[in-house]
Length: 259
Ligand SMILES: C[S@@+](CC[C@H](N)C(=O)[O-])C[C@H]1O[C@@H](n2cnc3c(N)ncnc32)[C@H](O)[C@@H]1O
Image (cartoon, rainbow, N blue to C red; front, side, top):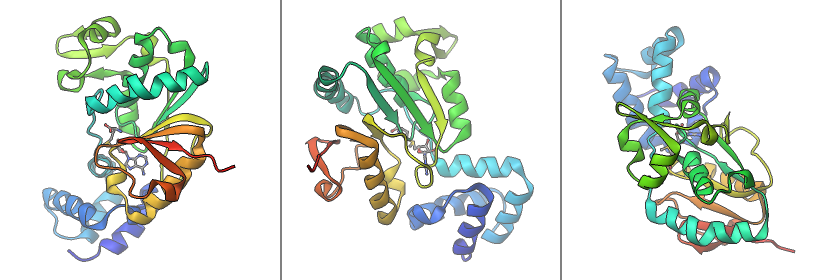
């Protein structure tokens, strides 16, 4: 389908998402399937629909942001975090500042909170969580999940920190109130600073190389000296040293201090 470039310019004006930072082939495939699903055959008429219908604009945002997640996604990496990374961070500092930077409906920051709750250390951490998708953030604040999202949560944690009604698991207030949820576009907005640990998982895969290059630099700046950057399971950084990172474990990078 023709007209993608013009469409991206209009979308930038309409909802502040710069699609030129997302891999074109993948994004085109997704949007074109949505266009057809709406019974249309070109970008121009789809844009007209988006401009006039809030419902379709919401559907579009939902579809392109792809907020699939689950608690403790890729459990073996969370074991490394729990057993190798966090003990070192905790031993160096009494109070940690952690940012989950594409938090979807909250599964990732709540997984972090559960690790601290398990050790009775919730008061020793500030947890910031952000995403571009307002709807996902609203769900995150509610903290209610279907059974498939919670499959990786160890039973003692599930029993202790969730209320179960019918087929829904809802986090208790003591966990929910720990997370500071914010709307934040990684490609556009200022990052929280002085973080001890940043998670950016399963979102970089959608971005172009140029966008990734800028983001790695921004993540480096957002970390404290020797802070840790935790990435998704298909998102290893090709040349971490180029960005001032040292690969401390698979999927975990440490900020190298050059002084
Ligand atoms: C597949 S989910 C990953 C969720 C979680 N980090 C995980 O690994 O399970 C990708 C998330 O990235 C968000 N996202 C996409 N583009 C973004 C951007 N430019 N800024 C911030 N978040 C973005 C989406 O809204 C979505 O919630």
